[in-house]
Amino acid sequence: MPKIELYELAPTRSARVRWVLKEAQLTYTSLGNQVETSGSDAVKQIHPLGKLPAARIDGKPLFESAAIATAIADLVPEQNLVARPGTWGRALHDQWVSFALSEMECWVSSTEINSIDFVLPPDQHVPAIIDQNNAMFRRSAAALDGVLSEVDYLVEGRFSVTDIIVGYTLNFAEEQGLLAQYSNLRAYMERLYAREHCTLVRHGD
Ligand SMILES: N[C@@H](CCC(=O)N[C@@H](CS)C(=O)NCC(=O)O)C(=O)O
Figure 1 (cartoon, protein in one colour):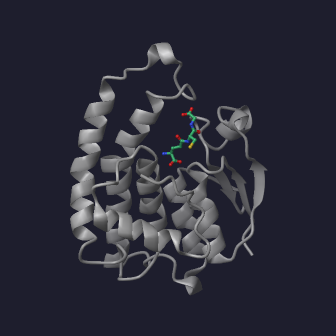
Figure 2 (figure 1 turned 180 degrees about the horizontal axis):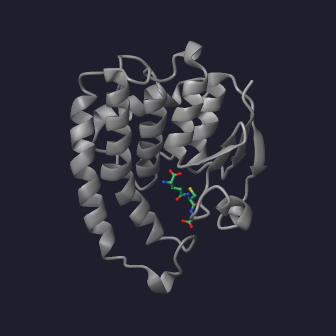
């Protein structure tokens, strides 16, 4: 059994990691699950920005929730949780993860940073950015909604860690009321919420 240690902050992005761990039937040791852990010297030994989640897998440090989730899926090839490295399916996994993080989650994250005082104090918020964030998110959401009118899952026609990573992004957007107009995205989220091991908290829209 691999040794997995995790600095987490449920139910934020570490939910991706906990979900894939459950699907993989792997256990882990939590090294902390509180907001004060972020920015600590201990977390900075893994993540240069001190952000959560941060993991050690068999003693090796790894940060970024998508990278950690994918690495865990690769530990258990028999569970078929991610397209195999080197396959076209794996290229599509990389495509959808990159799309979710760089074309969707960044806008939602910017809105959050400019709305709550977890990262920046209110006097450094730029509320005017939020309309632009929403417009940029909707451009990508409409594209993904179109893709999900044709398929139930994003890679190889089956549930995989790709859906865990992208699903978290959409769940984050749902918290900001951004999914209401996209019936295929909402149906996709219903498929994900229905899974036994889903760690996402439904926010409603
Ligand atoms: N891209 C990173 C984002 C990590 C992140 O922003 N984590 C938040 C909690 S969900 C955090 O630690 N924020 C503290 C900060 O921004 O300083 C990932 O997916 O792991």
